[in-house]
Image (tube, rainbow, N blue to C red; front, top):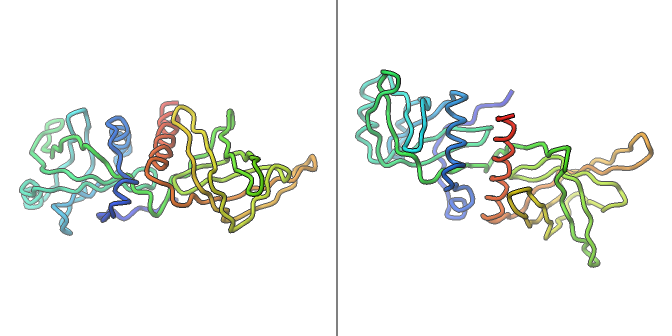
Length: 248
């Protein structure tokens, strides 16, 4: 069972702001629509204080969001008077957060609601936990690893991928993956998204023997110091695959 993510406000450094901020309207819409579909819990904070209500997202369109009001009228009044609201929720065990300048009163299906303008940006915070996506079996992803000592490359099949790292498998003859060792300038081509260049560090390694006598290496690898553009490519790929699975 997945554990709940605490819906607390995250204070971001300038580097994290660039790394986790999404500005594409379609991507923001996808994550918010998922909150509607799953009835996810939302904490709506008045400014940066500890005052918040737990609510749900009722509806979303191109103009904005409708959220359920509190049963406590005093809490509703406090939120309506606040000139800064912070929205915190989670999708696929990853925290979502954005700031809105002001809420207004509205109705949804005849019931009182809060209305917030559609956010210009959304933070998808993968600092502590990462949604791990199983790579497709058909047309699998590959990680091309440069050889450290000569101008050659080795290719490993990606079993799973996330903002935190990749699971790789390769034959013993393809490349030697060493726990604790870093491999720089590794290339991963993400279909319809782009090419990611980054450094991986092997965290664990399992050596397996197949029925036909081959030896396979399966390695759990962590991305090291991915820059903002690379992280955005990963987020877009995971989002596209999630959207594909949801629609299928």
